[in-house]
Amino acid sequence: MTDSWFIVQFKRNSHRVAARNLGQQGFKTFLPMQSCIRKNRDKLLTIIEPLFPGYMFVSIDLGKEPWHKINSTLGVSRLICQEGIPMKVPEEIVTALMSRCDSSGKLLPPASLTSGDSVKILSGSLANFIATVETFENKQRIWVLMEIMGQSTRVQVALDQIKLQN
Image 1 (cartoon, one colour):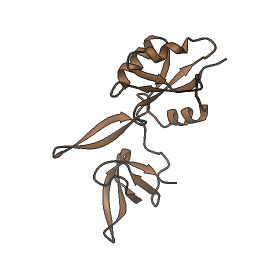
Image 2 (image 1 turned 180 degrees about the horizontal axis):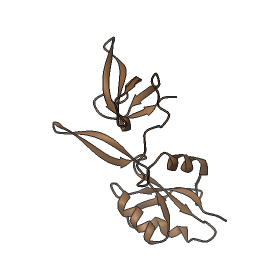
Image 3 (image 1 turned 180 degrees about the vertical axis):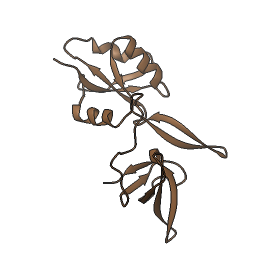
Image 4 (image 1 turned 90 degrees about the vertical axis):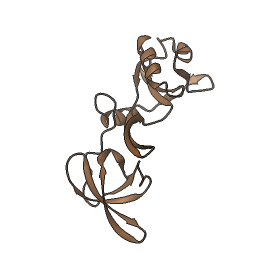
């Protein structure tokens, strides 16, 4: 058998502890991260958090490695299983996610974003709004057009705040 990717659920706010301890046991982990803007009192803070809160990927060779010890790893809640067998994640999904991340695992904005594309705002006061890309100011900020109260409004957002709509 060869290494395959599986999902580990980690304890609340323990992704760093779980990744470190799994690594010390010889397991390869992948934890895609994203930038989010959160409001703290009257300040807006940019934080980096897991793309899938509470979950990370772990590479295991089920035929060789004692995968049962993952459940007793500090920071880990459990390895996601079905009928006692770890549930394999399709290789294409993990590969596609890895190709969208930098070397530290942070999700990069889509490279194919162009004017006229429909995007969803992911964070901030305009979270979950749909907008249309208008222009690019630089590599990190763009101008989008949004329908707000019946009017088309031009808003500047960071690239890591948006997701391409299908």
